[in-house]
Image (cartoon, rainbow, N blue to C red; front, top):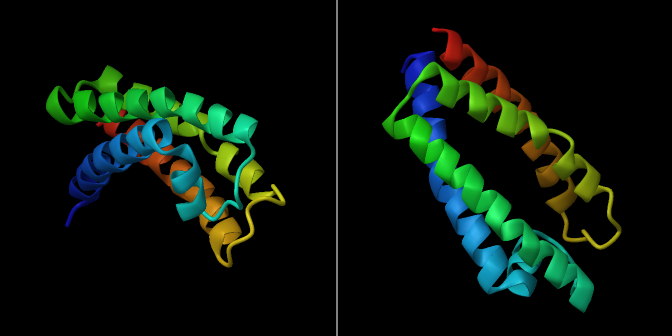
Length: 127
């Protein structure tokens, strides 16, 4: 598998991931937070998490556009979007409410994955 093929596959996987995460955050924020390793959220935490759902759905749409259209600008936009997410999961992992074993590490690794995607999608925009 070439680097380009791996990045295209990653992009397709992110369409599904962000679509599921965004939809679940809107439809069932408490259950989604539990899956992510969060303790029982307060009502305001559930509301704040639900408000993030449209953000992830926007990410899914951007990944879909890059998959279908694939212009340099589409890949550059994805690189920027993924770059905005580099520190958010690491910051979230510092929350004492994230307590399930492995959840903090998973969130920190999500930041690493976002660095890799940002770099990879930037490369795609210049190929």
